[in-house]
Length: 194
Image 1: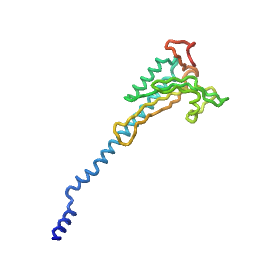
Image 2: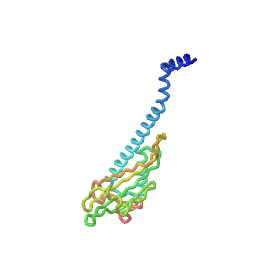
Image 3: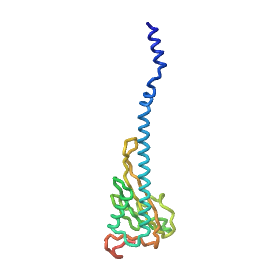
Image 4: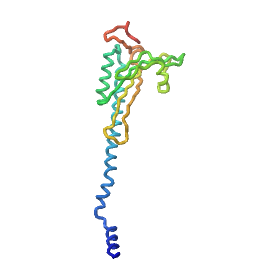
C-alpha cells in the first residue's frame, strides 16, 4: 500500500509540467509593481525638471524687465508658471529683490511679492535662509524667484504626495535698481518700491 503512494510522490516530484505558469504567477506582481514604480519615479523627475526649467525661464525674464512688476504682472507670471509646468496641481510663486550690505554683513529684502499662497519674504525670514544665499559683493542686488508645485503620484507605490520647491537667483541685466514693485498697475515712481 505504501509502494503506490511512494511511486506517486516520486513521479509528482519529478514532474515539471506547469512550472512556468507557477513561476509567472509568482513573478508577475513584482514585475508589475516595478513597471508602475518606474513610471511614477520618471513622472516625478519630469515634473521636477519642468518646474526647474520654468523657474529659470521666469527668473531670466524678470532679470531683463525694465518696467514695474505690478499685481497684474505677477498674476501673469503665476499663469506662465502653470502653463510651463502643465501641472494640474496647485503652484505658488514668490519674487523677491535682495540687497547685500557688507558693512552689516546682512542680506536685506528690498521688496517681496507672492502669488498662489506663499508668504512674502521678509528680512527676518531671509536670515533663516542665509546658508542657501549666494556670496554677494557690497550693495549687490539679486532677484530671487521661488516656485512650489504640488506633486501627487499617479499610482500608490509607497511614494507619498509632496511639494517641489526651487530657488533661482538672477542678477538684473541692465541696472541694479531696474526691477521695481508697484502696487498700482498703472502707477508711477511715487508708488514704486525699488
